[in-house]
Every structure is written in structure tokens, then in C-alpha cells.
Length: 92
Image (tube, rainbow, N blue to C red; front, side):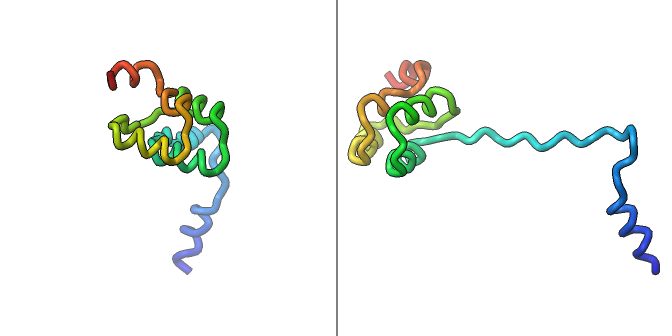
């Protein structure tokens, strides 16, 4: 059968000394206002939300309507004001 050697080659173990393929690096997950709202509704506390804001890359909408939506979703001033310092300065 012509397919036999092809299948065996596909399933054969790696050759000794061959460079191993590096595992794919996960893409950074950006958080946004909707992510914060989902986290808060899931019961995560202010400390976790603020820490996530400070440590994770994010894209935040800081328009008045977006801030009102965050407040209406139950986020505290501490969380809403927990944006990283460079973002705060850029928004001012």
C-alpha cells in the first residue's frame, strides 16, 4: 500500500538531536470595560479587579457614558479609578 510509509513517517517519534518546536506563546488577553463588568458580576472583589487592571494590558473606554455604565453595573470608585497611571494621565 502506498500510503503506509507516509502514515508511519507522520507518526514516527522525533529524531534525536532535532530541534524541538517551541510551544506557541499565548497572546496577551486584553481586558476592557465589558470584561470588568463580567468579572464584577461573577462576584470578584475590588482587590482582584484593581490588581487585574494594573497587571493586565487593557483597552478602556473612559468616556462619561462608559464610566456611568461601570457605576450602574456596580463597580466601585476604587475599581473605576484603578486604571494604570499612564492611562489616567492620557484621559485627563
